[in-house]
Structure formats: structure tokens, C-alpha cells
Image (cartoon, rainbow, N blue to C red):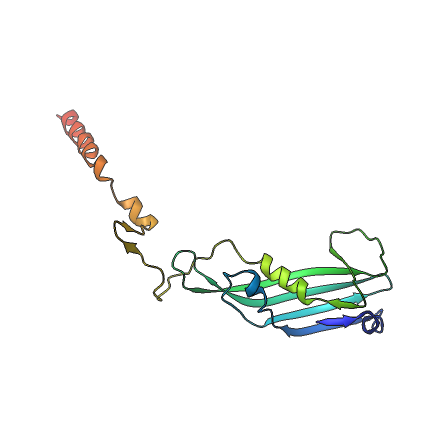
Length: 174
């Protein structure tokens, strides 16, 4: 996803349509928790004028991440809309958009797409009812306790206290 400034200026005052698939597997080197990256589908258009070029992009794809609880593979969908603006000739421009300075005569969107994908990686992902065997659920003197089991289970140290209240209720009825 590289264009020279001259190629883009030929399309000035027209919309340059973008519909490409990008290989973003190099983000796996940056974030070791990413196990796989599907081809990333980038669509959108570019608005080109004499002082700036704005790319209106939609980035769709899928990352394979480890489940935080069981370490099985989780397919995490990515769908991001972004506007990336490149300033030409050192122009100063202020807006709420992401602003980039053009270095040289080439505009390369690949590093920006990689950065956006890395920002979309969540802190933790939980697999929904995975049938695959992942991390062990119990071990020597420990086990994973699910929240519902914890609510229904009475601490054995407090079991005698529950009997105490049952005895008081029976004595007050007589």
C-alpha cells in the first residue's frame, strides 16, 4: 500500500478508491501473543488536494490470540474505521484526525495499518465454551473455581455458623 506523491497528485480532485488485502504478519514479531493474522482487507478512499492527502479507511481482519484462561486459540475479529491525513510540503494543519508528515516522496500505509492492528489487541480474551483442551484446570492442591460454583459453595469454616441461626429460629417459634 505504497504510492508516490506524483501518482496521488494525478488523482487530485478525484476520489482514489482503495480495496486491497494486506499481509500484516509482521505484527506477530512485535506482539508475541498474536498467534496468527488473517489477510487484512483494507477498503476506503483517499481525498487528495494540494496541501494534504486524507485516507478514509475501513480495516477488517481476524487475529488469533490465546485465551487468557485456557490458552486455546481464539479468533478475534477486527473492524476499524480510521482517517489518516498526510501533510505535504510541511503544511501546518489542525483537526481531530491523525496527522502524519510525508517523509520523502512515498506514502506507505502499511506501518500505520500495523500500528492500528496492534492497538486493537485486547488485554485479555476469553474463549466461549471451548471444547479444545487448553491449560490444566486443576493440579496439586489447586483447581480453577468458576463463579457459579463459588456462589453455591459454603465455606466449611462457616458451616457451623449456619446451623447456629437454624437453632435460634426453632427456639423462637416455641
